[in-house]
Image (tube, rainbow, N blue to C red):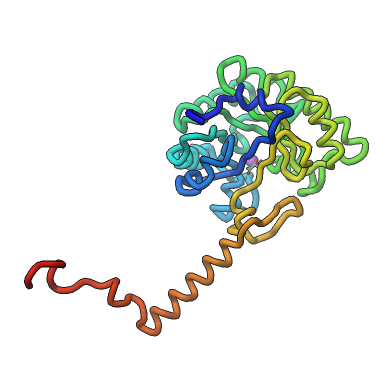
Length: 272
Ligand code: KIV
Ligand code: NA
């Protein structure tokens, strides 16, 4: 591919080969995934996986912009989407536009993502009509953890109707795609069939139009806990600890640095 897909290109992938995405927060990790992902999300999960916060509620607009800038420098193929953090968009469409415009201008993002369905319909429409592509996020919305009552599966039983209404609302508002987080597989399949924008699943269904995972989860770098929907494709955290332990042992035994890591008195090839 020559250049990054636009939100409309992502939208056009509805029903086709599944869209591939991961989160990223730094330049080197963005470089690792650039050639393999259709879009990369600078998720507010950065607060938990990189900053050690207990939830995403403490993530600020400044943090999202700083990490967005870092990720942007590592991408030349994938589109970048940046999460709007808690408190930066819920108050009013005007507040959302002011802050989303900063994110777009200061990071070079192709789109922003925000959490909420029916409640955010007006805000999403306000942003889209003013030039800001929006990815929606419904189901388990971690910024609402205090009113959802924990990180449980959303939309089971009668609550499925409300989730379908959320999916329809964000579609109507003009979102170009919607993340479905931690919802029953059959409901994810139903929503995928019912709305004309791509559904991006995380803890949803292989039938979604795309999938996303938190990169530190799938690489085994974030190990404080593992959600059922996470598949570990590597154990880099374990590898890192083994490397650090080996270094510590060698330093204490004066085995590191070795002869190849130290400097002679004369520059190579020159007489002293
Ligand atoms: O912040 C994040 O990482 C996300 C994804 C899990 C969708 O919102
Ligand atoms: Na997020």
